[in-house]
Length: 114
Length: 111
Image (cartoon, rainbow over all chains, first blue to last red; front, side, top):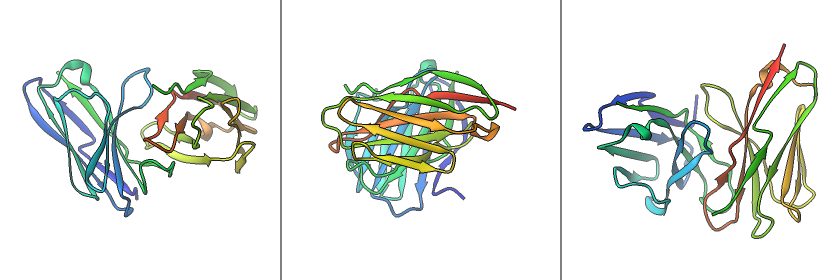
């Protein structure tokens, strides 16, 4: 059983669609993250939330819109995406976002934009 | 922009071989260095968190060393097994922002 669960695991969407990725952590952590893994690139940090407040936003296009309603849940709302946005999106959590605590990852959501 | 580099990019070894890979990171503003193992179709899993210069951590056949003054860490696997096949990621932390990951070393162990 994983402490961080992501749904859906696979998503295919058209460029005009609106969809959302969901993440839930059962570890009692204060920080949650969205990472993007594209082919042959390092894991790219997209957003960090600490106690429901967004604390990092790494120049991510506005077609990706995060939402953190509470410290256990994190969403990534997707709209008017491009084919190059196809990637693995990983959610993660940790006790604190700055102090080097271990990060616990979900299994990821594979997104294909057609 | 923090530069975290890992080498080699990929590695193929035979079962029983010992192997090692490198993670290079900025030597200034060091706070912590993480190693993660990422098996196919699974989530990345933490191996070590290292904070002190000269630190050495061990977990079974896997160990890691840290040199913060020169900005590198080595990960060693003794007597590689097929189940060690995975991508090994290192990540650097300054204590002021979230982790920065390297591109990883993809290890394939042939039976």
